[in-house]
Amino acid sequence: MTDPAEHSPIAIYAEGDQFAGLSGRRRKQLMLLHRAFHGPFDASQAASALHLDIKRTRRLLAALADNGWLARVRRGWYIGVPIEASAPGQWREDPWVVASTLFSPGYIGGWSAVEHWGFSDQIFNVIYVVAGRKVAPTRQAIQGTDFLIRTVPERTLFGTRRVWRQSVPVNVSDPHRTMIDILDVPASAGGVLHVADVLQAYFESEHSTQVKLLEYGDRLGRGTVFKRLGYLAERIGLADAGFLEACRSRVTKGVSRLDPGGPAKGPIVSKWNVRVNSWRLAADEEVRS
Image (cartoon, rainbow, N blue to C red; front, side, top):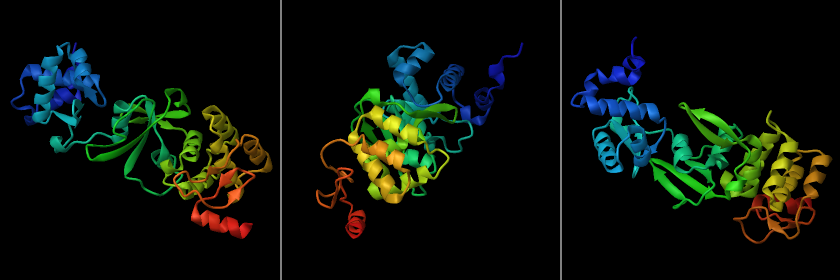
């Protein structure tokens, strides 16, 4: 019976000149790594897959990376280089795959999720990650890609959708959780003005589900979410009276800033206990008043 491994891409690749100088044992080890991992892996994971001790594994991975058979994601982490890579030393893994491995448990969120669901044409060059554990530093550059990581309690990691990136499952906030997140932290969408545009795009999309927004907001348990949601939904004319009343019934005491990163000044809309501290919205609010 023919061994399927003989016809695998790695086996075929091994017959080419690219593997010149690589011993048969090293070829077999490299094939095992390709089969075992479809994203970044570290020495301890590789040692388990190869049945080697950790010291030998570290030396092996370093040698394979130095010769272009593997690529370094960051210190101690590696990825397999695809057989079709014309310049193995310059190979870069999908940033979403990197994030799902290095910052797990968590999900792709904020402006990155906004882009994924098509709620904005604005392009952000930084991948926004929500992690259920402390990650430091919160801004990291890996393989030429910048990541911004926000830490949240692990119990709040709900409302996600699994998507596939190069055969690797990655969690991204679903459309409704994306809205709740950017209302909770407007900076995660680039500021409250962009949040208003994104929220409008959501309500006009096929994903719009008011019940889910209320459910997720309740589950997150932040009254400021309903202050911003209710104010913006009413201001832009996105929802009916029933939804607005549902938001208002969830508004907590105390005045919150519409934009948490903005100044502590601007007109207060008492109905929503929110200070409209975005100069553009504040100017319009004063005219409306």
